[in-house]
Length: 249
Ligand SMILES: C[S@@+](CC[C@H](N)C(=O)[O-])C[C@H]1O[C@@H](n2cnc3c(N)ncnc32)[C@H](O)[C@@H]1O
Picture 1 (tube, helix red, strand yellow):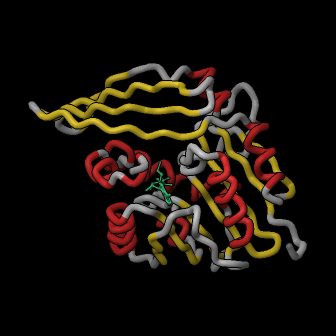
Picture 2 (cartoon, protein in one colour):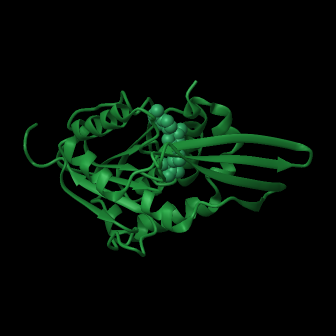
């Protein structure tokens, strides 16, 4: 089994990975970020939508959002969250390596390091080609990642933090000469300890841009944060945006 197919990870660590604070941050970004501004009724694809941190506020602003995720448990959470907010989401359980709906979306988003999950480079390229095929002419893809330059600057050092009823230890490891990154979690509550890990490919800005170009995207550019800041030494995220282009294929 691949790590992301482990439902126990998403269930046991859900409030650690998807805290209320993160949902608030996503909501604020949707309200203010020029990168996430969409016209009402725009068709938006949220690839690896998880519990809907972005999908729900985007739907709240009038977008027709399709959330795709492999985890049934997280899709259930997204469904409950949308009902709570009184918004509609179309939720699809699918592997992003397989999901394609040709010419359907104005914007596709991949948030909070939901891209680069696969150890095989060809699988990650396949995701990009699927997304491009799923965009309308002129449609855009926005990828938000924990990028290689930011990790190199900020460390990813081990840390312990308090969570409701216990403590969480997080320990990051760089794998394969900076090709991949793995975060190991230990969650201790009372006398029970649970462990899990997540893993993703580490991309530099130029590596990720080159992949988008190879997949056929045009106008490929990077940003260092959700206010569309430049991707420079102050960057907080690696955000890459590309357009399908207005051509036929
Ligand atoms: C780090 S979480 C981010 C979730 C969401 N984008 C957010 O901002 O909260 C990564 C998400 O990718 C999903 N995922 C992992 N592997 C997947 C796959 N092969 N196909 C579709 N979704 C997948 C996980 O279930 C999880 O919801």
